[in-house]
Amino acid sequence: MTGMKKRIRLLFLFPVLLLIAALTPASTLAMKTAPFLGALNGDQASSAADAAQMLRGIAFAKLSEDTNPDLDFTRNGQVDGMDARAVLFYACGGITDWVSFGERVSSGLCDERLFDRFSYTGTLDDGMGNYKSENVSVKILSGRMGNSNYHIADLYVQDISCFVTAFGSGEFRGRVRSVRDIFDTVEGGIVAMNGDFYSIHLFGPVVRNGVTYVDRVTKDYDIAVLQSDGVLMTYDFRTLTKEQLSAMNAYQTWVFGPALLDENGQAKTEFHSRVQPANPRTALGYYEPGHYAFIAVDGRSGESEGMTMAQLSQLCQDLGLARAYNLDGGQSSVLLAKDVVLNVPFQNGRSVSDILAIRDLPQE
Image (cartoon, rainbow, N blue to C red; front, side):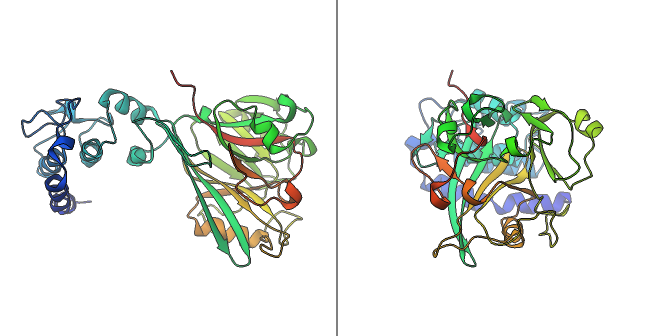
């Protein structure tokens, strides 16, 4: 973007910010606990008016990290429009502690532009899967495509340890259990879904929560690898080598598939799978580091037929996912939260060997 275009874009926000400032009560704009940081107009409170003034200063190169390092609220090494957004977020009551806010945003998996997906003023939890804290954000969505209902847990995590897997009976190759039983063992668990039923696909690799249980790499299945930096990669069968896997910092792996999108995030038309007709489905979706989706499709009922592999692939493209990976489906397909089952499992689901879960970190 040229300098002139950037100025125009920033200046376009001035009227909106000033209107918000005019309509926001003075008690909100001058909180007793408001820090002096960002208080450009001398009232010793960060407000929407300060956000507008910041945008103006940034647009005309009057403010920068060199001249005003205290304005780098997101701690990305520069003072920019994202910091002005943070001031506006503060003025609306979304931030109470600039220091902890900066530490969380700058150290998290998610891009800083996603900071407002999280809660910095306490945990919000409805028990139905909708959840917000400074570490995790989950929103439950449902929709219909063709003759099928689908359910999505839209997930944002700032720490990779919030994305966990768990085994049945709490141990590798332990006895199968229901998704609910396994989920109940996850401390701080928010939402969960069934995994790849690794115990009947023990071809390798099996890496869970950073621990390698099986290091061989099958050539017969598409493979998904979640790295410790939050990047999810999918590999068509016969493409991932043991040497490549060893060079990665693998955090989780799954062997089931198929991979549902091509390298450009487009729906595929051919799949390495023997289960392509309409069925209940479970899939893991990936947008970018820290942003994922748990997807469950109802099936085998008059209300919801279930999706073919091609339909599931198209759904993943329509959702804007960059990568997506099919997991065990059919009667295994279960998506649940603490207080509710979010999909309609066929015949109430079945016992499985493993789950994927999102949890929050223990509160200090």
